[in-house]
Image 1: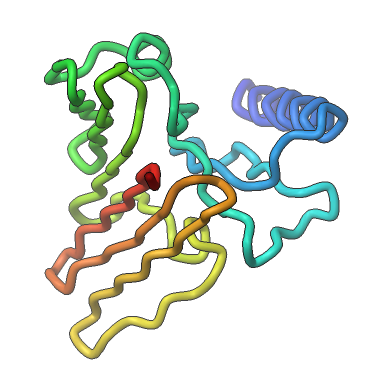
Image 2: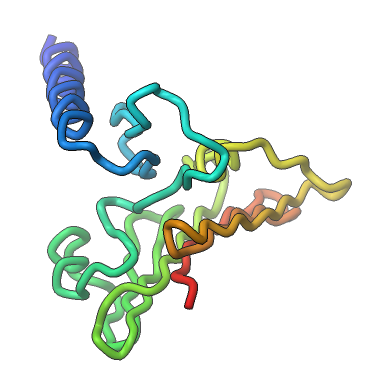
Length: 171
């Protein structure tokens, strides 16, 4: 019973949040969050244009965010430095956040390892399917000059595969 209430309440909160974003004129795009119940934010029409980035943030962290804000969102990093932080969320998910000289995020790299690691699909990240090579690996990078960054999706051929998603500011 509590699970149904929590799911129902979460759905209502998400819908309210999306409505507020839509009214406020939020930037179209999606963010990846491990909570699969969280809706993806999209343009008012519900569809992304090919030139719009599908991946705009990770767990609330965006390119250009201050290191102090990142640590508030993600908690205490396993390894902390002026130039980068390492966060380990589980045995199968970790992220490195890279900072420039002003301690602002310029790159985010997320790794999903092991079986049933909950990694998003290439479509969720790039808004398009990526064909696997003969060995099962995948790689695609998309530049979003209007957004000021690029995003890549890389899946290894190993068993189990490792998925790395990288987002980096362009100069």
